[in-house]
Image (cartoon, rainbow, N blue to C red):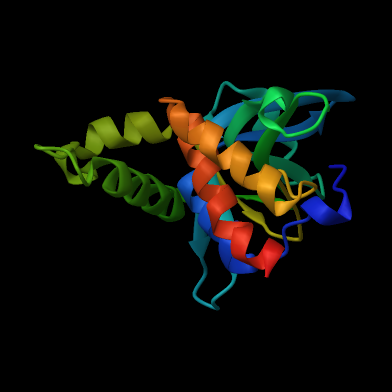
Length: 209
């Protein structure tokens, strides 16, 4: 990913927070000379050794997993808040642009065994059922139903070998125009604009101290 120095995100804590808050990612790899991508929730987890790792699963009929044990690298793209920025908001003539945050993670995949797969699914369900009035639990499934389900999917983990993180949040503007952008975003009522505004507020102190 092309990242100008001004837009480079290095803070590991912020990167991991972003990945946790935006888990619906794109898994990209190559199979038989062709690029293939799958959209799936990808969870940032920690191993017993304290190492950060990604875990997910895909349908067994999806051919993407078939060479996971052979390839050295896959790319996982985490997308977050993004929104259009009008140049009419500035106090000078300029062109419109787009503000956003994106994280690219590169690593080697490994197919998980049955016990590990059940763990991945259990943690995934627990996270997203947490606020449900009557939360579904993996324990609700009979063993026969669970085994049938397990046969239809492949779970895997991806080592985190490299991270490219970018936050393009109007860092090239002076403080006055930066505030103008924040003020205009605040007038909008969509969730994306509000999320970008909050991220801009997060980094403002470091930009203009």
